[in-house]
Structures are given as structure tokens and as C-alpha cells.
Image 1: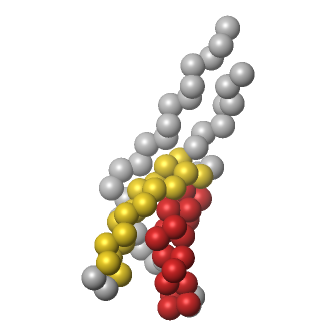
Image 2 (image 1 turned 90 degrees about the vertical axis):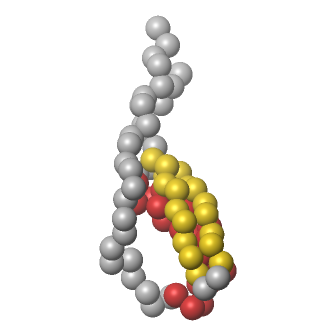
Length: 72
């Protein structure tokens, strides 16, 4: 049986110094997906960014995944 829950996917590209990091994440909403994707890239820089806050971000596109087909 399929779940009726939606999931979100986020793709991020981050430049830190000369490093360009690209990753994706899935979550139960867009903020959760963005959090997962950013943590993948920025985890190794955590000690340098602990006190930073996300104040603005650019959303290139946002689209909810279509619900899977129902089994009858």
C-alpha cells in the first residue's frame, strides 16, 4: 500500500573558499530537505559556522512530488 505522505527534495550548491560542494537531501518538507542537504556538505565545517544563521536563501524551483498511484 502506498503512503499518502509527501516528501520534499532539495539540491544545494555551496562554495566554501575554493571548494564547491553539491548535494541533495530528502525530508518531510522543504525545510527538512534543505537541512539534510546542507548538513551533508557543511558538516565538516561545523566548528567554523556554529554561530551562523540562515537569513536568506534562493529557491530555484519548488515542486511537491506527485502522489504515487493508488492500488485499487
